[in-house]
Length: 160
Image 1 (tube, rainbow, N blue to C red):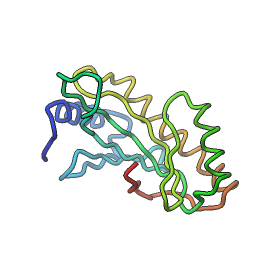
Image 2: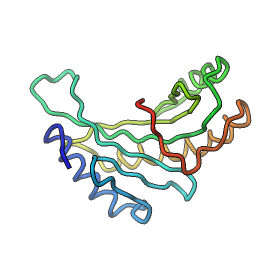
Image 3: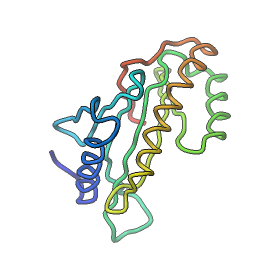
């Protein structure tokens, strides 16, 4: 596996160690070619974890990386103006993470944390649990209001 910088590699190794001893350990699948993991939250929601280099940041002499957790909430329900307005209103209420959409009408929920040597295991766990819980809860709400389909077993493929 090739990494962009040493912070991305360290973050990947620390994330892998956490996942292998976490409540998710039975469902974790690692991508063999890229620094990605998939896991299942409460047997219902797929969460994709990506370890990404953070190249444009305010610290010019540092190599940084982030962990991005995302889940596909619903497919085929937008991008209608009413849906976009609803998601923006809900984003204002979120403590962690935000809803996102793509041009195909897929709704995602994503959250990010800073990786590297200072990556906090509690912050990582909150990131994963919030993405899982919010995606699970809002899947029914969004489908009921805006049609679409449950994203169960769907893998986020958007470049968001």
